[in-house]
Length: 490
Image 1 (cartoon, rainbow, N blue to C red):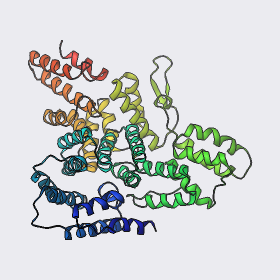
Image 2 (image 1 turned 90 degrees about the vertical axis):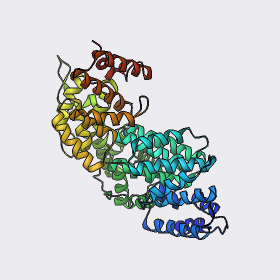
Image 3 (image 1 turned 30 degrees about the horizontal axis):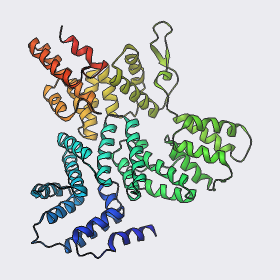
Image 4 (image 1 turned 60 degrees about the vertical axis):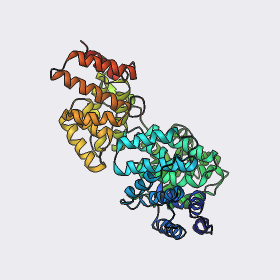
């Protein structure tokens, strides 16, 4: 039924104006949004191809107006998401427009330019167009969605999942407030598309399903929708009670019991919402009494409590037994699974990037790296680099680039291990001193100066460069870098 409604929304208009026809179809139903933002099914992809064929029938080939050029740019901008050769076509049409565009047309052009740069792998151009789109007054919500997913992807590349999730939450709130409900599912799919881990891939979909339940949808309907959404993900998500992803384990538990939750059972309903929201501590407080008391929910509570305890995030400081004398970590506090070890390494990386390296963090890295098994290569690479194990780090960086492609942090990390000044120069051009990429900007700058000094560079030139950098940030990137810059002056 839903598919029929969506198809009707996409194809019902009979407007003679091709641009209006395309705009109406684009901004009233999620079919095109699923193709250009999310994860389309084969059916949706074919529907969009049919729609674009209809639009072409309504165009006049001899019309060379700005409106006609813009419409051709829009068509190519949709097609380039599944036909790589359309990227150059889209750019060519945009370049042929010699007028300043405003409103939705202006934001759509910037959005296309951003996506073209991303699809071409041009990090610097993507950053430029992202900035222009961010500063554009009155960008359309779907264009803003593309920008949001760009920011989310950059946060994930830097292993800052907390920032990625907050960016999504903020934008989802904006979509609700602006009445753009049709974009919400495509954006949740977009979050899954740019995510690297299974846990991140399902985050937005689980959160959206939680919202639907809170909004009043029947639990069985929500489960069916969630299963349909999850079926689009590649590789497939296994729905098992042993899943390390709480929301998936909970879904499997619900499917296994094959029974409706009693709406009068307020405690259990609250528990399931807490688990989906990953508020594990509160969920544990409610689960413990149910698990201990004989009752209808005891077995479910025991299973869910075991799962929640298994996946509850461990603060880095609690993962170690420390020496009474030195206060440094000397052993792991207990055995952790691979997912938890990776999370602990990411916490340590984030701390090192924020406050700088320390003897405590160094020892923590050494202990965690002894637990190496099924950890993301990028995480292993950065962990080894931070403690000076450059040979191992280089191997992991190379493998990560082979698997994931080049990103700022992988290129910069590898360059640090191989003393590659040229690559560091590219990193500087692709980053900024005051946004989420700032760590890599300051790392690249300090390394280039250090290598220059080691090779006998002129102290006067080093001091002049540092003074220029101080104008961008008086703290020279913060505590983790200022001492290294200052050491170059003496």
